[in-house]
Amino acid sequence: MKIAHLSDLHFGAIEPEAPAALREALLQAAPELVVVSGDLSQTGTSAELREARAFLDSIPIPQLIVPGNHDMPRGWRLWDRFRRPWHHYRKIVSEDLEPVITRPDLLVIGTNSARSAGWNADWSQGRISHWQLDRIRQACVSTPPSALRVLVIHHPPAGPDTGTHRALLGRRQHFFEAISHAGIDLVLSGHFHTSYAIPVSLPGADPRNCVLSVTSTATSHRRKGEPNGFHLIEGGASTLKITRWQVGPTGLQPAHAWHFQATAPRRHWSAASADETGAAAPSLSTPPPSRESILPFSQTKLHKGTTLMPPASVRFSSSSSTGGFSFVEG
Ligand SMILES: [Fe+2]
Ligand SMILES: [Fe+2]
Image (tube, rainbow, N blue to C red):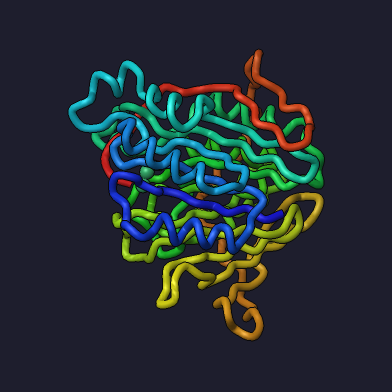
């Protein structure tokens, strides 16, 4: 299994040469799936979203895309933001805001964490609803234990080891409980424009870790001190290698890799090693400590009418849309 994880393309605020370099690197890396974890555009206009759609259409690889907080109308277009936040996105990028791919060895669940407004001043912050958490649990019910379970959500539920001043995903303790129950192995996020891959502690009667991959902006000049890049994820339900590709002196290339391994049957993930790509051999390192304070697992009531995802070959399914909250940067 090989997945390219891109995020925060931000068409409308593009580094001019970045899209072509990204396309070339993706064709070289040859993943079987490209995941885009939101912020395809800068201000959610139809022109920016069309640019993003045209770029993605130029990559002949199956794709799963979720929106970010920049993909709905911003600034003076408040009326559109509240009345029809996803009108342009649905029309141009994808009618489905929360696509799902299922196959015998892989389940990928897209979730929309962007919101058109919130009680806080910063509407760029993301949140997840109880309905969405139920949907994640239900999507995993019929998934084979041997399949890698991946969740794609724009707003990260945990920050890098160096810390962050940015707000994390709202309602994340419920989020951690839900993905622990669902057996999620890997969470793919963006929003911070910072690249990291870490194990994240999950609650439960038998606590375990999942892996969180957060990637920098793939093509925007709105960098947060890091080159443009993406993550290439290889492996399966027992081992994962996440390679950061980033712009260097000779173009977009592998720069660093994180390795994780899972212990069965708990799906408990820990860091196995890390290496600078190009080194002769990976150097062993101590797994980082758990980084989230954990609440006890609580029984969760499932809503009626939540869609079950039957096993299939590669399949895209439409199941929901969410209204929203969000603004500002990220
Ligand atoms: Fe962003
Ligand atoms: Fe964002």
